[in-house]
Image (tube, rainbow, N blue to C red; front, side):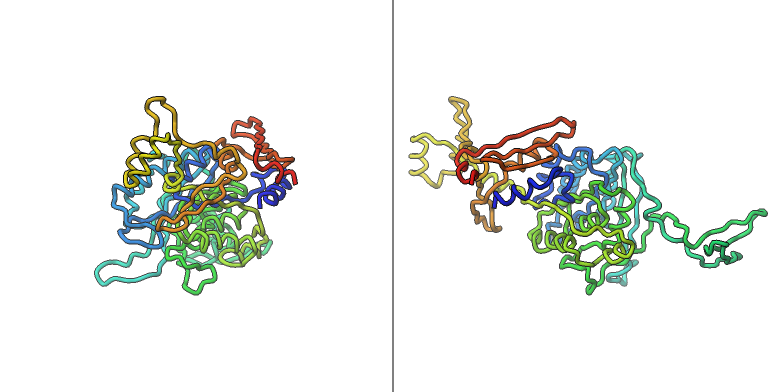
Length: 436
């Protein structure tokens, strides 16, 4: 309940700094807007694996025509650019059905000179055709905002000592294996344990059906793929963003590698797949890259994240309330079939220019409720809304401390300009209960 929630949160002296991640159940346009004040220029890595404009449906909407898809993506990419830090990178994962469109969008937003790579992910599995070459790869386009993080050593691959042509194998005095070749009188040595940076063609297989990492999600990406991206373009404690989270491969990989993460997903599978999977990661379930990281003593275990549902556009419409005059009420009672048109045309009192929106409900912020859709057929129920958290995001507040004390909720923090802010909330109708 509320008292327990704030008692728990009051134990943290640097709340937002201690939180490992944020998972939002929402369509991503509204969620990205919400994040602007709090995370502006804070994200070092954004990776998205959006609908590919395929013309068919998976568990999510994926039958956009080109113009709708371009508009949808352009809006979201532009908002993401504002969230990227000066050293931020943007990875856009597409296949042959939309990669050419993605390149145009990214050139338009980031400019062509900010292009870094077009990575070919060769997954090597899937169906075959008798009429064309097998389609066994996706494209992952990479752009930078200004500079970019690139941790070459962290993603390096051991060279190995395969003997080629006239190369000779050898072992140094310190036991390091190598191959060597003599050219123009000089001997060049290539060591087995030497790391070389991968090129832009990545041979990483798809997940198999019986792989423990696999969840019930057709387009799930393997954590091995995400590991290379996260390691290369972010540091520990960097913010990693994925606003088409899907099965949650990005945020799970980021968490295991000790990055902070932000995930956004609107699908009906949010709780059963996306949320459930990150909870399993925090409880220590070994899957994906966990076993290898654990051997290296590099696996982050446990953690602390928050998740919430964002009010939808439809929820907003369901919660519009208007103060009506007696004449208006009588009219609506007499002609109930005209209700929608009436509210649409007379939602503002034209004569006095006063809004008819009912704001009285804000008088009890700890017990603020809205009608939230519970199904796709329009059923709603009254649900408690966290006004305090909502205002924190709108103000861009980085919360240091939050404490419930004698009927008052004290929120202490700072904005991104490092200005200290103190907010005190009081709920007049709940003081007796809170004092207990």
